[in-house]
Image (tube, rainbow, N blue to C red; front, side):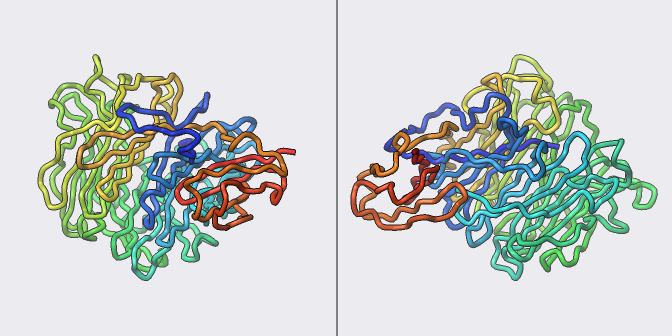
Length: 523
């Protein structure tokens, strides 16, 4: 299982002005492990972004952390973290999504990773954009799937369409890769919620008779998406030669009614492609064009001529027929360079960005080489790609921590001709999280540093003292929350200070327009 750490920070420009640079800057500052980031962008405010990841917290093992920006990544909030469901547990595999109304959901695993005496996929909801989250709601419990450990790699998507199921939440999972505790056959799993995450449906296997994943592919992970009409679809692999033919298959499961019913069809047959390098991160990815429900793409890796290349296929008729494999990376064929860690996203107008980890500028070949993040764009209705461009500005050295399953990850969002990317690398000697933002018009990365230090504004505020406010806040409305997310004050700024005697001692978050900051009132 993966460890995911999410970080979001908001810094006042008047206190700590961050200037965009053309070099990578750090998001996380943990000294042990920060890994597997995931990102969500508010559909109602594209400047509102939340990033989550896995990280160590003192006396808490690995936890899920989140951070938020309300100005497109220029400044970020101090990260917060989620308490475990059971003391001594570990958390992993976070995914984040907004619904159409701007409610934010976080899904992740909280489990006993040593003995599996307990384990859940939980969902937390935030009504203030990620500043704070509510209590965990159980979506899947390992008790629902004996001898399967069906809580691995949860992947949550939320319906942002105008369709009848708008707001529906879908989570797909897969059984853990544990030969001692998990027995074949293997399955992708599925739950849904149609009440804004208050409760979830009973656990079901996403594969059914004649569309079974089988007993050969140990983790037949489904990759889900939702089309513009609000139809849930997920693509998953299958190889069951005894009853479903000699070929491996990619099946698509779909639901038009919020997950109440699931239908499957065979999207394509495959002769399969083995990968000699077992370290390669080759997670498949299925995406649907938001402007055309019939236009689908599917990404994977292919080893050929000593290379490992990023390839994809696409369908323009809803998955009935597919193109031949299209090689994405444009370096020389047969040069022995290994590419992996692919992620992609459609823009609102149907343009497609594809990003991956690239080692072409290293002196050697194979997995354990220094790497960079590259990207490429395929415009809507175009049969050709843009030139490749660098998403990261610095080459990151290899480290053995990247060889562990799931310890590296990247996520990309593409909206309003702007590319947002977050990934983990080890250039500092520790696995940490980086973030970049770049415009399609010049494809030059603006990479912003996000400090994880707890900022005190101005320096702890004592009771009966005045909190000095920036001059440009005059006339605007401020909101003050405590750490639980409870709103204490919401009022128009009429002076340059706020009287803190109205608050008890404790830690608070003050927000005005797109600026957010934490302050502490001490005794």
